[in-house]
Length: 627
Image (cartoon, rainbow, N blue to C red):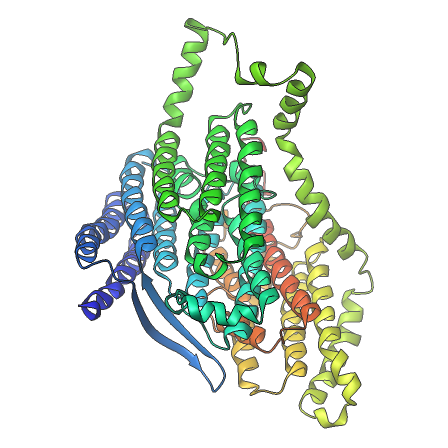
C-alpha cells in the first residue's frame, strides 16, 4: 500500500511543472486561456489531493518517503531528489492548494487588461511549483530547490510594476534578505554532511536513536546546524531582525501579496522548523532561542501594526506577530497547534489582503460620516504616559529595523567594498588574471608547494574571490567590468576549494560549467545593450526591458545560472564545493558563503539597474518615484 501512495507523490510535483510550462506557451493577450491554465493546474492538483489525503489518513497516515532521482553520485557523496509526505506536508499541501486556487480565480478578474497579465500568471504557477517542491521535499537538497524558486518568484512579483521605482527597489531589498536565509540553509547543509557523513533524508532524521547517537559526540555541530536553520527560517518568515522586509513586499499586486506574504511564502520558515524539529528538539538552548525570537517579534510587530497608516502594512505586521507566536508553539513542541495556527493565520490574512482595497474605501467613508474616537486604548490602561509615547514613536519608526539592517550588514559591506580601490580594471587584467594562471598551474602540480603554504592558499584564494565580488557590488560605472568581476570571483572560489582537498576535479568542472555558460550569455547581452545604449551605467535604473524584452528575459536566465539557481550544474556544484570544506574550516566557509551572498546581490542589482525601473528615455511614459 505504501508503494502505491509513494508512486502518487510524483504526480503532485509533476502537475504544477506542466501547468507552468504550458502557460509559457500561451500567447500574450490570451487572458482567458492563461487564467484557465492556471485554474486547471491548481484545481486538478487540489481535486486529486483531497481524496489522496483522506485515503492516507484512513490508512493510518504512514510517513511516506520516495527517493526519486540520483542526479550525481561518487564514492563519498550522493545528490538525489527525495520526496516526503507526513502530517506537516498534508497540512501545507491542502492549505496551499486551496488558497492558491482561490487567489488565481480572484486574479482572473482583478488583473483584467493589466499589461503584465501573462507575466503574473507565469510567475504564480512558477511560485506554486516551487512551493510544491518545498513542502514535498524529503532532504535539504530538494528543499533548497523549492526554496530558491520561492525566492526568485518573490522578487519578480514584488517588482511586477517594473517601470516604477519603489517596487523594484523593494524587490531588491527583499531579495537581499532572502540571500541571508539561503546562506543559513547552505551552511546547515554543509555541516550536516559532516555530521551524518551522507545526504541525510528527513525520513531518516525522524529516527531518535540515530539523531541522539550522532549528537552525543558532536553537540556543538548540532547547535551550529540548528542556529543556521533558525537564521534561514527567521529570514523567510520575517522574524526579528528581518521583519521590515514584509511590508515592503506589499508593492506587488494584491493577489500576490495575499498568496505570498499573507499565507504561504511567509510561513515557510515555520515549515522549515517543523520539518527539522526531530533534529533540534533535544537541544534546549536552541528551543529557548526560537521561543525568545518568536516572543520578541510578537511584541514588537504587534505594536508596529497598531500605528501603521497603510492597511497592507497593518496586515503584514499582524501576520509577523502571529508567526512569532507559531515559533513559540513550535519551540514548545506543540506541533499540531502550530499547524492549526498556520492554517488559520493563512486563511485570515489572505482574506484580509484580498478585501483590503474595499476596506480602505469603507473606512474613509466611515471616517467622514460616522467618526467616533476610542475613549480608552490598551496602552492607556497598562503604560505610563512617558512610556506610552516612547513606544508609540518607536513603533511609528518601526523600531528602526531598516536602519539596523543597513548599519549592521549592508553599509559595512559597501564601505569595505569602496576601499578596494586597487581592484581597478588595469590591475585585475594585468595582475590578478596572470596570478590566477600561475595558481591554476600549481593546482595541478601540488607537489611543488610547501605543505605550510598549501594550508594557507585556500583561504587566500577565497579572500581574493570575496574581494572581487565585493568590488562588483560597489562598482557604479562599468556594467561589463562588474559582470566580469562576478564571473572571476567564482573561478577563484573554485580554485580555493581545489587547493583545499584532493578530489576528482570533474566536480569543479560541474560547478564552473554553469558559470561559463551563464557568464558568456550575460556578457554577450550586456555588450549588445551597451552598444545600443552607450550611456548605460549602474548609478540609476534604466528600464530597458521596455525596449529590449527578449534580451531582459535571456539576461535574467543568465543571472539565475550565475547565482546557482537550479537550472544549471552550478546548483549541484555549490553543494559539492561545501563537501570539500572541512568541519573545522570556518574561515574558508565564511568567505565562500559571503561570496555567494554578495554575488547574488550584485547580480540582481545589475539586472535591476539595466532592465528595470523608470525608463531613462523621457519620451516614454515614466512613473513618479512615489507611485
